[in-house]
Image (cartoon, rainbow, N blue to C red; front, side, top):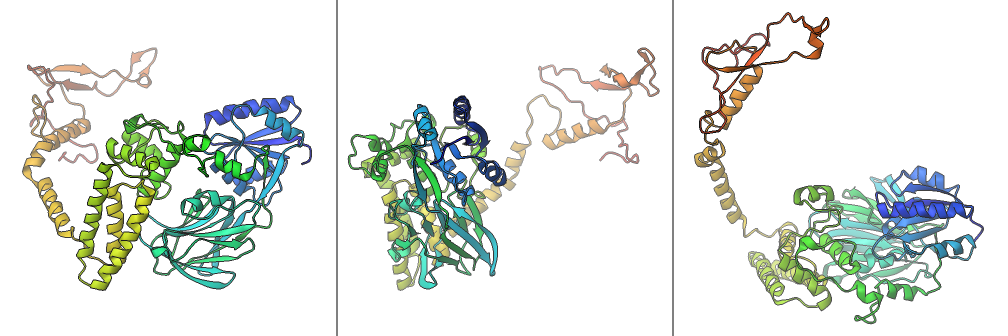
Length: 558
């Protein structure tokens, strides 16, 4: 590559370590005669593109997600990118946060290796009119929303009808993205030198649609069914757009690719082994570290960022159990809300289950089998699902329901990170909504709801809720609130006999002429109750002979 005279530093947003390293890198570059500037990764795209056009290279300080997000914004610009890893895997950001100086010396000397990655261009049409478009470095996903229902997607490749895929969604990925979401959905790994796209269904119904590798110049068209449930268009796992029935998504490769710098002479397969994507030996090596979880005692003691293997497993755990805010923003608490409700720190994790269940689910990740306690919970979950199936009287329909449940149940067991109770809820919801199955717990829920409603209306509960501590003269909380409201709305009262009084001090604005009192209004006094003999406070009831009036028209206070 040509000589480097200016570098743009892009840091992960609100990441203290990345910002501190960026300051050190900036000082080092300026000492070597290289002009540099810095921007956060979440800055507006126009500002990032404008600053990038005047730079010879871009140094990204963050994880793979930050790298992909910046690369997507700079699609079409022939500017090389280099990453310093502050994430978990570091498949794209290969430089370490410690000891980056030799790599930057190679960059300034023009000894870096440059490789070009394929990018995607997508367009969303609604009613034949384009409403959104953009680029993707990893993948474009059409997936279901919050409700666990089968999503039918009509697939066309180069104008040829491939049929309707009934699954949880469809992933169109680049070779770069084949190691991301597509790989988790059992898609193929594609070598970066292979110019190809992959089309991967997510949990297809009866495995009716296998993953397909397509030529890079293929034009893919995805159409949502008019009566389809809620669906989302997701770009690189960072941008989401709600879809409507009948929407059309066009996806194709971009002519200009993404230029990525590398100082490693290792092969692609070596990088896969180092990052844990290929496990040839599960007992040693960097890859084994990715597949090993920490010893879990209490969930409250766990912290993200200390164990890459646990972090990867926990993120998939949150996604499968529908507790990831980004997947279902309307139904799942945000990280800020969760930290407020549970009083967590920023790196702490949350799991909606007991410590024992979470520990045994995590253990099944590397044991490749379930401990007896979790196994018994899954057996009980399957029996609950069969109860719903047997509730159906039609034999053919019941057979289809059993086949569907067996397929999804086996798929969830293979993942080993979904709670048994959550699995029951997901499958039962699908059966009731998709197969129009009856709800065997409907009468039971109605009974308990009515019982609870009767209890809430009971006089016993209302009396208990309105009870005041001993020593207060009011009859209940409503009476106390009314008395307080009356006291706030009352005009200045004359002193009452037998009570102590407190005189309000006039405000500084009411004092004129060297501190002399020039107030025309009479001095305001409010009664202060004597302390209760038992030590508790006492609030005086409004006396019947005291005229309490509002100021708006002199209407009597209710």
